[in-house]
Figure 1: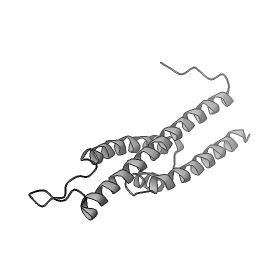
Figure 2: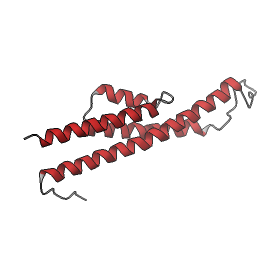
Figure 3: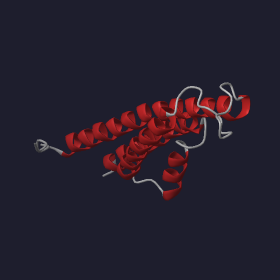
Figure 4: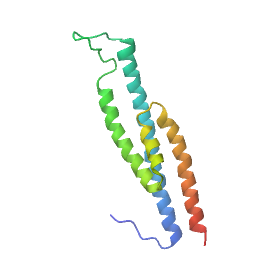
Length: 137
């Protein structure tokens, strides 16, 4: 399905802004989901290796506390997060440093929540500068 042709330049810009905001909304959702799963993974590791709640097996390996599924699920959620980061980054045409910071948000505990706030500011600034550039004759 193709998108309808814009009748004037303003509606094209508005449509682009809506798609860009949609990319940010998808990123925002994935930042919270990824951050939450990463915190759950850190809790599992803390309980398993530091507290050793379930003890060790016959081989001396610590037993999972919350489940072995947490690392697997976080890994796949991180893949989706990385795709949403790339989509947002490419739409906004940001520098390489920004994608590196956003990608790091999925592997450093709590950073995804911090980067989501920074990304919200970056998106606002980028969209405002585009509107100013489009309104300049």
